[in-house]
Image (cartoon, rainbow, N blue to C red):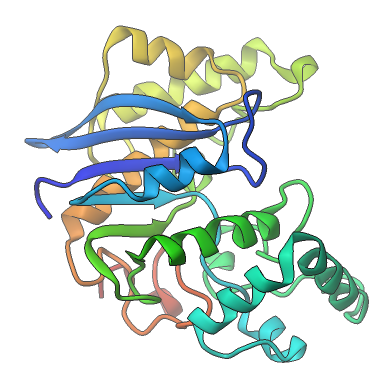
Length: 281
């Protein structure tokens, strides 16, 4: 897949004009990543059409591809990934929410949310979380669409080999560059300090001064867009694009994911493997 188109996708569980799904499209150009386009998908038909684009492409998607095994066992849900996804899709958004709310109520304080193995090293939210951010709703809206589109998800589903989807977490790369807050949808919190943080992250991406090491090639108008978008959606999509490029260089069949990952939980791209095993090992 050396000539594959790369996508970084900043996802939302309710796309609309005000808050679309954001896609950064690019490619590896020699030893750098070139950002070719920033796209806004304002509804589900647009996202589904995006998934149906012919390959070869590799996309890094900012939503969970699996659920915690502990919760799946406790809830009595199907124990294979495809059956689990189909079951959650059949519940629908509201019943899915209600069952997770009821499940959390059975758990002790401080342990309301079960986590996947990848969540601790990534410092990511549990996929059972339904608010701030609603990653559980992102799972139930996003993953069934990946399944129906017939794309391959390494470690979870072998399907169309020229269309590869990986779970990404842009915040992981952003934190490795700067610990400063860099985004918010709340207008009152859209400060100059957050803009400065975005500018520093963009500068690090362009120079390759980050853990993934691949420099990002931008046009001036693109750079300005990433810095001035106070929501951080454009920057998050671009961070995911950089993660997708690292995965492409790691190559098939695992694209940098550690081997032996839980086939119900999945794994987050670029995160070190279980027990400190590095990605790709």
